[in-house]
Amino acid sequence: MLDYLPLCADHGRELTSVAFMCKKDQCTAGQIPGTTPAIPGMFPTMFPLATGQPFGALPVMPVQAMTQQATRHARRVYVGGLPPTANEQSVATFFSQVMAAIGGNTAGPGDAVVNVYINHEKKFAFVEMRSVEEASNAMALDGIIFEGAPVKVRRPSDYNPSLAATLGPSQPSPNLNLAAVGLTPGSAGGLEGPDRIFVGGLPYYFTEAQVRELLEFFGPLRGFDLVKDRETGNSKGYAFCVYQDLSVTDIACAALNGIKMGDKTLTVRRANQGTNQPKPEQESVLLHAQQQIALQKLMLQPGAVSTKVLCLTQVVTPEELINDEDYEDIMEDMRGEGGKFGALVNVVIPRPRPNEAAPGVGKVFLEYADIESATKARSGLNGRKFGGNQVIAVFYPENKFAQGEYDA
Image (cartoon, one colour):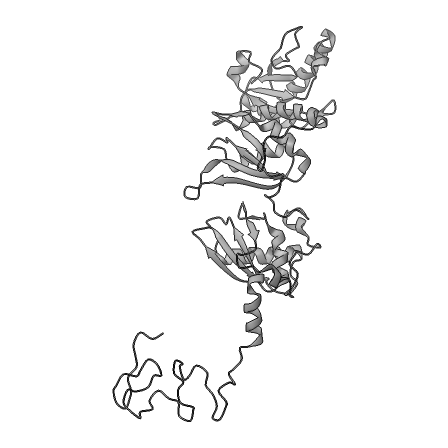
């Protein structure tokens, strides 16, 4: 719409806003020579008609343009949870490459993404695909990691399911190679569903890598999100995760819930329901997990550094320590193995006591003359097999060891 009205070249008068005609009687300024007089309420050049052409014969919008407009709602996907560094180009490139990797391109060679709109303030984007089928295939990418963060892939609010069903497939192809981009086939969303775990009470100084290391003790993760403040980028003290092997969900929740981390206590449960008890057949696995997690948390304390003392677990069982001769044989074996990595000062293997709880039973402590030797021993012993069990070796606080506190 013009902010001013043009003047008649012949009379210098202002043309009317209705027909762009001069206010002077009989003036035909604003009309196109040889055409039908201007129609009130319409620009005369809006639909130029040839001489003698009936008014009803208006130009038709190209079929391709009409098709694109009509299918647009079904060709777009909503992508939420974008990191602050995301831009139109990076999003377009990423999704085009991922679509090609999973075999989701069905409209021929070239990039699947034709347009991207980003709302930087709210951290979401609308990604427009070439075809309805490609947009449906993109829905299988829910939970994919983009620039270190899992993103949500959803239908936009203007999506019309009934209309979209007439335009093309409304579900992702079952033949997509989702494993090529780290997603599990058949699982819609890396961080959705009944097996999503809430991990609360995390100390704010825990890094993403430290939290993942703690969680991945139970197996690889299908999805992980450490929630951070949008302004500062600092952790908010809680996270969500989903395991690739869903059978370990309850084991991980039971083992991690209630563990003290620094000045915090972890709350770990399924995100959409209360605490679940592990099944009876999971109890033995849980007991091992709780012991190992308790040791691993020592590595996550603020300022944790290497020490001269190494703590080994899953080397011996309480039953093997009861007989004196067996105990001495084990002590000799530990001195021999531990001495391969440097000067060994002391070996402590707590033994069970009759009718009395003995702290540290089941652990082996190796004290070295220097940190370098202890570090070599940790690298050499951690993960080794002893009696069919995989040894876990962690550094142990020297002050606790000196005071005989073996249950930390």
